[in-house]
Length: 330
Image (cartoon, rainbow, N blue to C red; front, side, top):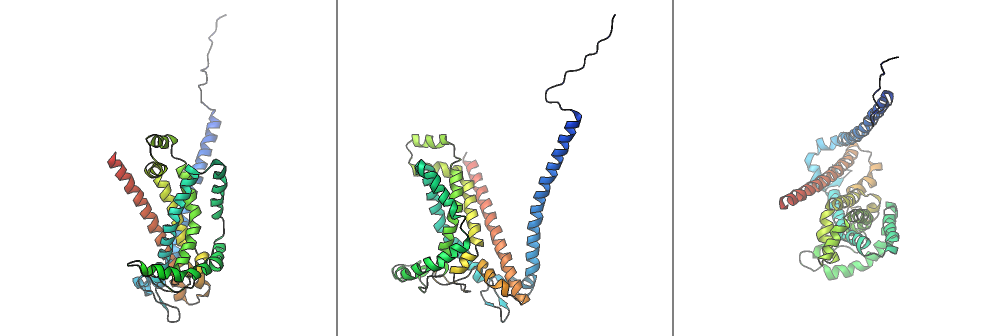
């Protein structure tokens, strides 16, 4: 008996039943839409914050105009408001914090990644990270009750020894009260060190060992390896860590409010009391019954937001410029 035998094609590797394939396609579509929704939600939240700040500050922007950003008069009784003094205090304290915090953080990261004994690496790294978990109000209390009296005791000696130096002598003058712009910057430097040091340590460890071993093999010292090999390789992460610390310094509220002196004052003397945008908002927001006063405070918030945006843009531009220069060298 003869017959025709039909042979079915053997299933190829990787093929799935039609129902299973449609299920996976549905899952992919849901996942894609969900992640897209979260991304759009972040942008919508950012746009909402910007819009609310503009709406709240519209009264000041229309009545005072650009004059608000270049005057230092702050008199709620006469409805005269200028944001230059808080802006000045914010920039000076953040600058002090970075001038102190970045070198210290760089040294901590070098020690933890290159020179620290293995038995101490984890405890010291954990201790640095724990500093970031301390609430800011604790830093403020420590600065007010511990650091400020110590600085008040030694400020006369500092002023007498450094206050007469040419060009920079003015920086070290001021009343020996222990609180002021310098104290606020010093507190901020302690607060930003764990953020910057942790990021630097993590990005330094991503450097391929073969690069460092090659440099050591050529006779380079530890400093030369870090400066000429590790730092150029990890510059994007290092700048990101510094920007993270700068963002913390610009927006810190309670710690600065405790020790800065809360005076609307513009001075080159670091020991003089001052103010910052965040401390101004913390001190006066609950007491602002006048619409003009409230609008002025919200305008300060808008100014702080714009300042953070400018700092982020400058960091991106700097990284882009460094990449282009490296491309031209190669």
